[in-house]
Length: 297
Length: 296
Image (cartoon, rainbow over all chains, first blue to last red; front, side, top):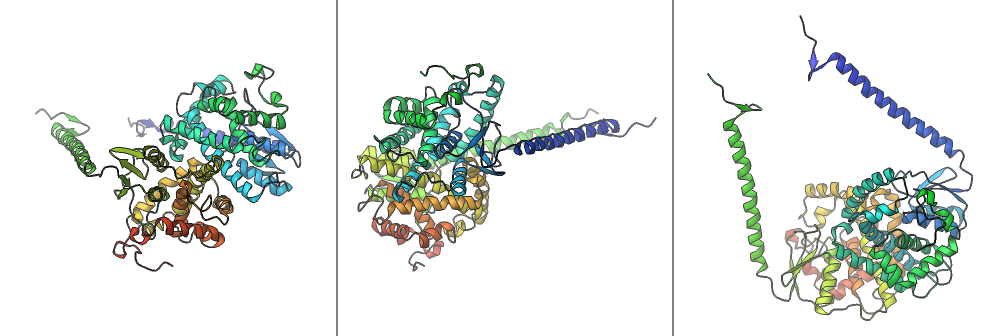
């Protein structure tokens, strides 16, 4: 009796079944992708004209966003009085970043590129009252906040004990667990590549103190970063410092802002009162794990 | 006749040979490591007291270092008049960075941590003439240069140019093969850092904003904060000098040479002030350098 030919112990029949399964899964994946795109296109048709659609990762328990850049961008939109709606789709841009926005069908990512785009498109200039030198200083401080202080915060939140980070995650327990695990892996690699991740905790603490001290000294007794009028740079400084105050419990950032640099704390509250009078409606309700309506500690 | 036992077709004899070879290689590696450590300890005993030993990656063809941070640190040592010697060992610190230094037996890495260490140890303060506000602004500009402008340079040199100019700029110390290998590693790092996710056009726009901010703040001043240099000048010089002398044909070079003349004047001013022996700190022609040749 002739035996069936086999390939690594699999008969032709087995191979056909495996092949069919793989092809079926591939087709299902393609169909799902097409369906997602279809739904995405349908949703984009509902976007209002001349209105920014701000794609974010959802509201936080204590703060409108657990990420500084969506908070920065949303503060800018409010400051510049640009009509916008939020889409808490938790999707990332083509560059793998958040937030990103859509304006009259055009997608833009990176918070600063969104601001530059809107400034150009709508003729907005929140810095027009500043001198050229002030603008150059503001630019340097924006980079300090977004490309240095930010990494110290990422280090504290993700390079060590994750308890505090888990406590502020605003999603359901399973999603929180999955996201913290996934983000920790990515952010630790980012920290190493960027350089901050190569320092010891003591060294990073020194850097945190240097950055916050520089911000506090420059702000001094001024109401906003450059005087009595707010400017575009206030959006980014606020976005980052608000996270230190409300999203990093027990951290050195929180302690320094709360206790050692009271002018920074006053500044954060001032920006919040000016541009976020509805702050309480922009954080999660208690049923969703949030603190809306609860007295602030 | 009984056959020899075998494991995946290898006889006992084969296995013994393979095991012996692996053990031999492992022993050789350990012995080599021990020898390196012995030589390292021997060398450390020759380090002079109260003198910084600055570990660098070697001189460049047109510039004392093709990396901004060794140039920053060496400029600081000259500015603060701290005795030092160079060890162009091309070794990296425990954090995988360069430069690093040894002072009276103690190793310190990261250029800014070296500066902070020496400031504290030796009571140096190159910023004492600055107000608190000026120090805060200086700190912000240092971060702009080292944590932002720096990455635009990394992308230009290693991603867009794929390290093509590095062999020449290093006087041949970095081979084209090594440059290609480094270039492959740097791209993903820049992506992780964030700037590498942007298009080249977007990065050039970011570069322009940083350089404009520096140029605007410097204005007509001799140094960043007036007539007297300060610690922040070291870091700005370290980076801007790269634009002028080790990134040929790059937008960085064009901006520094042509579009922002006050920055060019500033770079030359710092060089004349702290590097009167610049020519002796670049490679000789026999080593692939331009020492003694007229500058273009």
